[in-house]
Image (cartoon, rainbow, N blue to C red; front, side, top):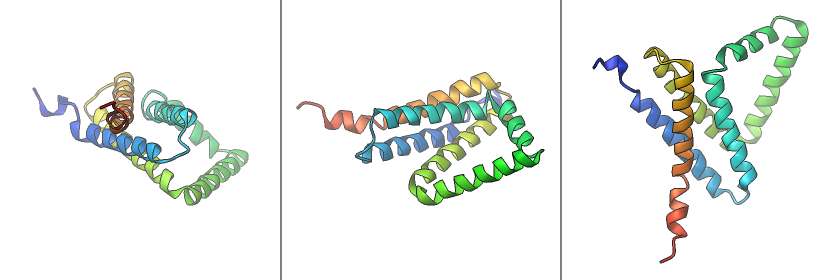
Length: 146
């Protein structure tokens, strides 16, 4: 078996650890309700889809945004708003950046191994959700009846 055909375990492990850390962060917050967990799951699905199966439409949308004056103005406002969110919620934004970077690294590894977009989406999604699920283990063991 060639080395290029092996699954990229290092980048997959980084994505897993990033999602475990994010899940642990959500557990540490007193305000982390079911709605917050659903938003986190939606973010994971959106992140994985944008980096794999929806890459072309998202790229085209962003590039079209810079081709007109109105689109350019909207993109500048969106980037400025993102900068405000970054400064305001620097801790949670850091988790999002780490998860995005780890997912992007895995996507690049999968792309260089010529794995298609649909299998890449499934692999990234499963690893991300597995990481968030693993973050529940300490709570389950902590609340176990003795």
